[in-house]
Image (cartoon, rainbow, N blue to C red; front, side):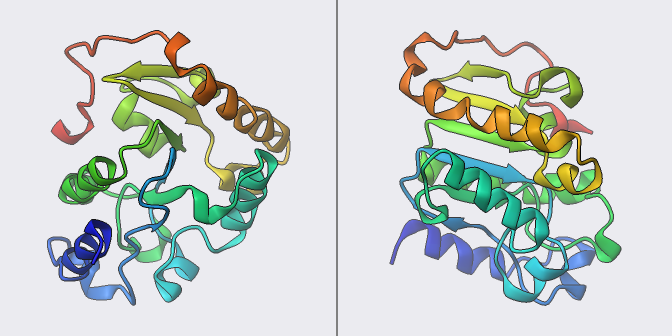
Length: 200
């Protein structure tokens, strides 16, 4: 049994948050255990909760298109969320929920050991680009401990603001070159505020 499958079993038993009582399924994530690219979104929505899979609604269809635009298939990357259960009413995740799910995400990152982590939206962005604004840093990358972190708008943003669609497509197309030229991405030393979202 793979390390991720073992982890999924643990996640399925998690009852740390109130929202665990209302979920249909946990949504740990899916994809290749040795993926070069790890996409991290926000939280499961209705369709994800029903199916136990990440990004299967309209935003997920757009993400599939984006992945195809860089000549990859969904099965070749890994897709996860900051939290693993659907927040009631599709509200934003609470800081306590993000803190409670932190170890699950950290273990996924450790198992997968991706070359690049792509943050989709402001919640995952805040974990790796604390204090930054997504409108200012989307399409940019930093490197820490040999891993590239690349900020993008959430695919759902294109559903609400059609003008962002082309921006998101353009940002996605930067990813293959970043992986190919990873040695050239400047390593950034974490500052005192780095990765501080869970101290909220």
